[in-house]
Length: 198
Length: 310
Image (cartoon, rainbow over the protein chains, first blue to last red):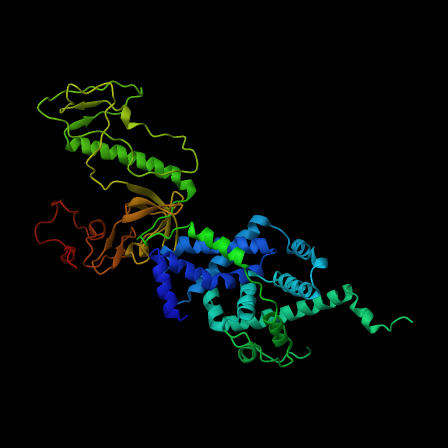
């Protein structure tokens, strides 16, 4: 869908066209959900916050002005604000939710467990970064947005985004490297290097 | 994962090659730990909303109706709603007085007894065309309970030159529907500017969003006494005021037809442009008489810049 078409869709939604509102929701729901999912601790919270984002979108549409920046940049800014507000409200620790999400891992296929563990590891690593850095990591590498698109969302220049990307990846590489070692150790990975007992 | 080989720009370029934006594929890595870290995120599972969750959220947002665009929406903070209710009451009373004057009715100050006697002087030749209604035309439902209930206008004692027909039950308190001198539902917010954030002006904790293109924004400052008139509406769950005029009360401000603005800073260091009347500044700094005061200088003796032409 071209940018022009999105603008037309937004224009119709601003006039109260419910079909246009639904089309916008269908188009952006999954990416907004993923953005939130990686930043909060539970699937339920992510769904609830996604709903809040789109309710805010509908309420705010009359005041939205088409400025040339992508419409989704506005949605991500709403989502970022919802996540921050959610953290203020709950003040829960991400580590507590890891346990919650993996509680029934024994009943899941191994592939599912690995998938959940990978997501939780990324979530936990992301939580070590500030809001802008988390937004950059998710939009750039989960959503595969360009530097310019991320710059639009963050209100920064592409050069600033590139600099922040470099800095953030450096730190994340270090964090994930450490996590890997810890997880490997906890799961008994070191035993692989030990000769099996006779 | 051993060698860091990229600076921010080369990293960005390399990532654009290996993880092209907007495309799901990943075209390898180059051994750099930063590239591998990015690739790891890119290859992580992509959680999605289930169809049930999609439908549930869809149902939620269809409950929220988009509202047609309006100019100058003013969002009233919850702490300002009580003040708004009080402002309504004042406006209704004042409007009633104006209307009563226009209709030849004298409104006397409200009595303290709710069962006040109505003194009505009859004029049988006229059928009263004015019937009463002190009910506010705009409705505000504050979430908090208002404890300072406005004085009911229904308790007013009215002496009127046109009176109801003799068959009218005079035990019923008359109310007034004024022919408003201002539009129905008009509110006035007047007070010192507490803060200005972009096009948001705050007065008594009431956040007022002014048109970003309004030249008044370039002029008003924190502490200025400002009067804002507007009509009230409700957008979603938000009480809004559609601002009609924004006037700075306590200082001399002039706005030209082309949008230029001049503000009297209170000293003589900021002379007004020719199009600005600036009577106060000229009287203070040039010795020109204020308008209507002919003392001191006769015709043609004033400052040539005193005319009001643009």
